[in-house]
Length: 290
Ligand SMILES: [Zn+2]
Image (cartoon, rainbow, N blue to C red; front, side, top):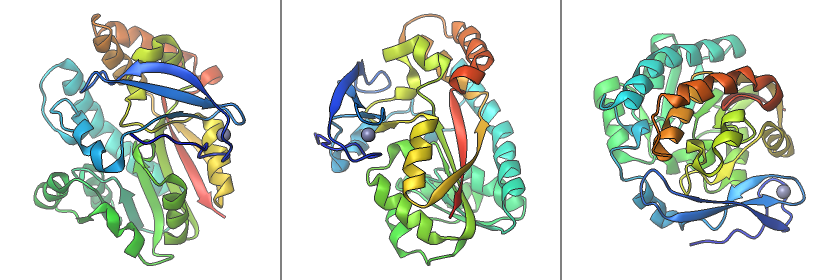
């Protein structure tokens, strides 16, 4: 395990315990989320060493990498995914003029496929070899190992997307700086992450499925994103809600509480209603290179 001494957002080292919680998804191990007393950023601490994190992903339940239709939650996840893929492509079409797309954490390549069908010239980076092979064979899109991030030409992308990926990244500041180099002038970065300020996060506390420790290293709020990226040469241009995520995350949280997952539909609905105050369960941040 690796203890982090400094806040990744403000670099100060006064940290306090915020929440103790389990890895509900896979190992049932206990983890801690800390709060930076200086800037209020929350992150998992300590975290597994980078070389060991793979063992926390080995589960058929980790639906991000599977397309199985087993169980109600997975079924809904797949139905909603089809709809949201088109939505995501629409968002980037509206925001950028160029067509050169880099998708970081491209997984099985479903998003890249839909982007390609809509005229984008894109490729992905993905650490998991099985997912990369699936992307090539089934979705006919290009993806390379994550380590290639440091070999990509400067100013070679008009848009970079990270759909629920940033919260998993070990070298956060360094990788964001690299993305800044890869983007062309005025290029945009789309970052989708869970929002720990949301109503559903407040309601479920240690059972909130989007804490997802230890796979999620960081637990962002809008203010954290704005500050971190401003520091690294970006400006927060827009925040887009992901309205389905509140339902999905709430249903999964109910499952962890061993209650009927359908209760989650109610909480998800309330969360979206209260989003004006707390923000949505997950949000997309559109960041422009400055
Ligand atoms: Zn801080």
